[in-house]
Each structure stands twice: as structure tokens, then as C-alpha cells.
Amino acid sequence: MNRSDDDRQIEAEELLAAEELDPRDFALLNSVRAYYDEHDPVPDGLTDRIQFQLTLDALTTEVATLTQLDMASAGTRGAATEAVRTITFTSDSVTTMVTITPLGDGTVRVDGWAAPGAGIRIEMLLPDGVDIKIDKQTHLVLSGHDRQLLGQVAANMRSLRKPDPYKNKGVRYTGEALRKKVGKTGAGAK
Image (cartoon, rainbow, N blue to C red; front, side, top):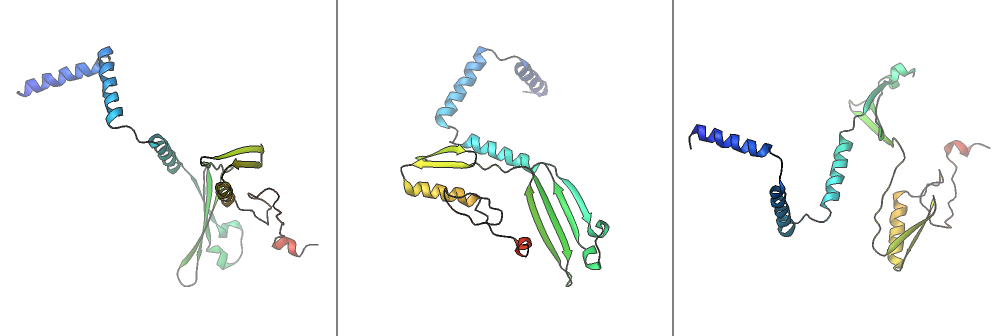
């Protein structure tokens, strides 16, 4: 083939590619799909893993608003606080605050906090043989035949949000008494 034959071949392929698919094309594509389904099937859970990865990618591309607060301009007093800088990143899903404090030996101390932008949603997969029923908005009932498995699932749920005696919040077992503790500000109050 010389150069003009190559050009004609390319033009013919481009014309074929521009045409609409006919029933023979669909039959050929279906036979190729059937061959791959038989000889190289899609692994179990691959679609879910891909969707999860796409969700993670979407989270990493979320844009956050950067706010820098200089403590000297915030009306604080003293030379020590003037050097402290607080940087806050705010987005729909999370707010992150970083405080940078210079120390006397030439190093800096970095403190950080993160808070969800909205309520936290927790999803948990239940093992086979464990059922859940929601009695009220804040009351779950686990049922199943294996007591050890039920106890483990309940412990896993509890570990997601342990009871806080100061705020009187968290995952508790039915009938569990949680004594609310008084915080530092309430210790001297009468």
C-alpha cells in the first residue's frame, strides 16, 4: 500500500464509523458481550467499589472557602496572642480549623479541629442472621439466633458513638443508666 491507499482506507473507516448501527452490528456487539460475560465476568462488588471511589473523588474535589483570622486584628491583647494565627476551611460537608502558635524555641505548635457541616450519617452492614427493627427514632432492636453475634454487632454500633456522661448522648443499651457528670463550669455553681 502506498500513501494514497492508506488515506483511502482511513476515509472508508471514518465513513463506516459515522454510520448508524444496524441489527447486524447489535447482534455482533451482543455476541462479544456474551463472550466476555462467560470468559471474563465482572467481579462481585466491582460496581459498588467503583461508585464508592467516584464518591471519594467527588469529596476530594469539593472546594473549601479559606478564612484566615489574625488574632491581633480580632481585638485580643498581649504580644503572645498577636502571633497566633487561625485558619478556617469551610465547605458544605466539613469545617476545619487550624491554629498555628509560635513557640519560644523557634518551632510552632499546630492545633486542628474538624466539625461536620451537617448531621453525620452512619451506614452499617449487618451480618447474615441479624435483623434490626427501629421502634422509635432513637431506639433500635436487634434480633437473631446467635447471641454472641448479636452482642458483637451491638458492641460495634456502640463503639461508633460511645456514651458521653457530660453531654448525656451516645449509643446506650436499653436500661443502661448514664449518670450525667457536671462540667467544669457547673462544679462551683449552686
